[in-house]
Image (cartoon, rainbow, N blue to C red):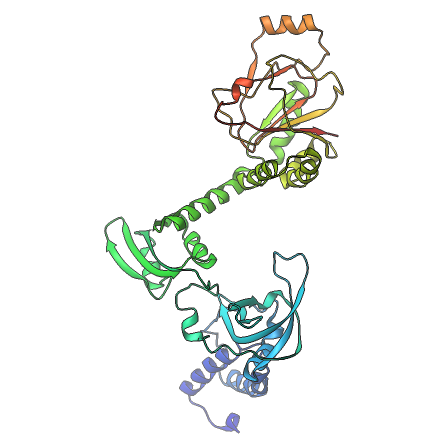
Length: 427
């Protein structure tokens, strides 16, 4: 009958705003009974208010996975029921089913989470709805947690990740003058305070746990923020910024690869720096330190070496992949040599440790790969020619024709530091 009542302009505006608000609650069956009324009201309002445009636009993501579980989880929480949930995190190789005792549905930045526990005396967990595969009824009774208070549980954290034994720390950060108003008017956390102001910017402090969401908010401000303390968070942000920079530095350019192919054919070698990120190098280094038997290492190393960049290099150079790995270069004696056996092979040296630019790892004679040289010819070239020092750092590649005239320098190895390099033979 409400649609038959004459409405004033003010009534229409208020109803329209209310309708736009109610339309945000997708996924809850408790609001489905309003659908007909909302539709009738909307039609009635539009019939009286033509050419009207929406003036409220809520943030929403209608294509977000997992919204279909909202209603089922809501009912389980209201009715205090445990559920059998099939869940697969982004890090898990396969899905896992377990009993879960839900206490709260929480939205954070347009993503939904269910908060609860797996077992008694275990910590509170948050499960993302977009990683839930299936929900069934559980045969177990709900384990209630009297200590869980949704009003205070997230009090000392940004987002949904709350650590059980993670301390609350004072985070002090400086924000540049141009971005300080944005942080001041939309605080990172409710505990945010201003410590000082000057014409360069504003120094703030917050009392929070160190979690992923905190790091994400800090990184979101880019070059306009600097962490002053604690030192552990400062180091972590610096590491992530360096890793972010490496993503661009290690980008192998298609155009550059084509020119490298020409260099290898003409001069017999090419150098590519920043092919592997330092994170990848650390994993390789860790593997070399962990195992002593080479067959075990070799198999695992091949997996680690096949990153996106190396696969791209294989494709451009028309090589299928890794034929063999060698763990040691001939550092025992400095001697100019060619690999006489399988002279047509293409070889790659990957630097695992940083190599001093004043002490090159490899010296070569460009173009000396086009002929198999006798001992006298090698001596003549060495005595009359000027060798080229090949500089490449940790994560970089020295790609060369197998029979290129070269020498590995044992002087590159510091007495106090071992220099490791892998030689990759391509097929």
